[in-house]
Image (spheres, rainbow over the protein chains, first blue to last red):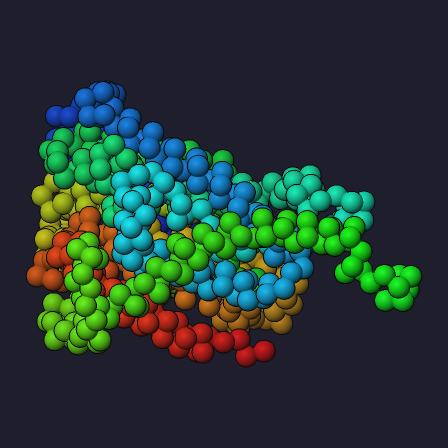
Length: 283
Length: 304
């Protein structure tokens, strides 16, 4: 280690000042949402200006906004819808993409290159680009305003296939061959050897799929905006439009919507990072 | 074949049975995923290109082939021309700013240490927050009258700003929200690239007397070209198709200053029920995104 010169110290101070400032920029809105949702309705904008300690630290705390949101305005329904849509997509998404990834990594079959190119092509198509034409397809399939319409298009995804393929390719091929020689079927090999080996990738893919479904807005807006199938993103935006002055409930709906993914994110963030680093850039 | 006592493997019933079973197994592995991808990803893209040559909504069942009429009418439409310009402006600012901030953040937290990893998690945190929630939250905070941002500006002696209610500031406010949400996400990709740069290379650069900036410019940047290319391409595509802030906050206004093409396409299809024209907009956007991506890949292509 070389000695720290004064200019090093100044650089270090600038570096940390910037990092702290940026962290505040990111955290302040989240903190503000939580704090506002816990305030009595009359206090929410009482201390908004000029800025004082009271703007950021409430005098009184109450859960009234949450009670009202769930009991009076039925916010449990969209929460349940979203949970269901996420759960089903995650389960089938992991299974189907893992199987395809396994096939592309380990099984030799004709036209494999062609199909894999197709998978890569679909990776480059962002969902927004196909949302409008997809609506006409789902309309013709009579699936508008069903949860199936939200689940089906989100299951198969080139990125996750890629993720599983990369992870399976890293396991030695001899494992596959020796199991094959002992007469195990491909299902057996997949279920008993490869699937357990890819547990971290399964968590990563599951987390990515869950975030994607929880956060999606445009597709539910087009395909499922009826109140009985509404997901949480639509519900919070509709709530804000309909009850523009119920600030307590609006903040509570935002807090519910961001708290669930955050609760998964903090303990599992290293899996999220794993998913990102395994998918993006290889090959 | 004579080694198998004259029986070629294809005609051995046991082997043949095995081959069929094995083939069916392979199909079961790949068909569900490929079928879903073809139905829900490939088909809609084709439908969008195909449908852009027809007029009248699919809802009435009557369709009429009109050739390039939808495209021609788009370019005669001053609203579309405006949204084309707005989309370009939004992208020319958002994408480079987002990538530069993401790169700075990634460089700041790339060293493995406790402080770094704490900040890394904070910088990543907005990934967990949907853009919709971010829009709602920032829209409240940027409220000209009772928003907390104006209170903070007031503290340092800056007058209250109009933000989304002003033609000149609405776009910038939108970009602010997109960056708040997006930079950490792109940082993560660049971070994996930076962390793959081996310590020994950095060490030898230090011994050779390279300063910090020199190391970043001549060693780290060239070595993360792959991640950089991925980020540039993905960020371009996602910003070209930006929809949520417009639909949630500005509705294209004030005076069309935030009217991104994706929102126009949505409105044309779902408010005016002109799907042919809506498909034409989406198709143009896809073709344009593809062209931009091609140029970017050419410019960023690793030279080794």
